[in-house]
Image (cartoon, rainbow, N blue to C red):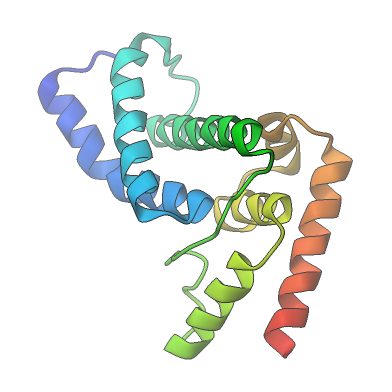
Length: 163
């Protein structure tokens, strides 16, 4: 069980809010929705703090909660609209090797133009560092599908960035 006083929760929030927001923004592509999801993540953490099993890092648990809430929201939206719209957005992690602003913009546009599932897999694998098996479980699909989507996303990115 996670013993969280108000002061410890405030510290947890300060330490992880930027990463949680960046993840939500990359996966949704919508600043307002990312802000709402970020708040939902920390409300969820407070409500479910007793479920933390102290088997990994607290930061990893916080990030996993964020990814799961975003994926749940996207699944819900997909059912309502009939399709999933995951748009990659600003990511200092993904763009750290890009020095020129125009290169960063080109990469962000290329990621945003990827097909939705390929985009989600790319963000989860290449930016957030999840294993393919974890992504398959989160997205309720097979590892083979994750591998295919990742290959497709990278190929399309190369093509778009070469143009």
